[in-house]
Image 1 (cartoon, helix red, strand yellow):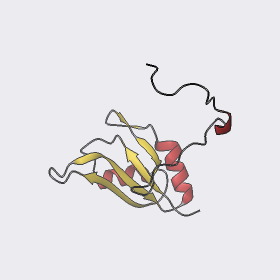
Image 2 (image 1 turned 60 degrees about the horizontal axis):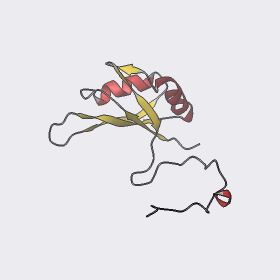
Image 3 (image 1 turned 90 degrees about the vertical axis):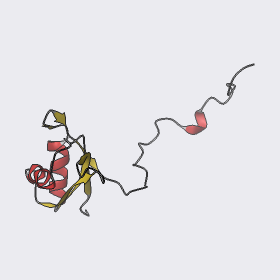
Image 4 (image 1 turned 180 degrees about the vertical axis):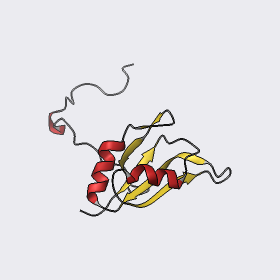
Length: 109
């Protein structure tokens, strides 16, 4: 499995790259940890990205760090997706051919 990036949301605005790295090192070796900064204020924007060195570390970080409170805020940890690419969608739970198409669409005037 190729090493994947993690999206980390709901971070305290004062969190640094070093602190983020230390948090994720509990789950395994960290390749990189970056808090995204506001261009004007240079303060954190409340999210960042972490790349774990191994797939085991990636899995452990997802399981153990998602929901952990940091300065009273529960961290959100999930797999990152490519910028501009939509996140993966869950499969539909119904058969599209079995939809009721006899109902009128739009407003009845």
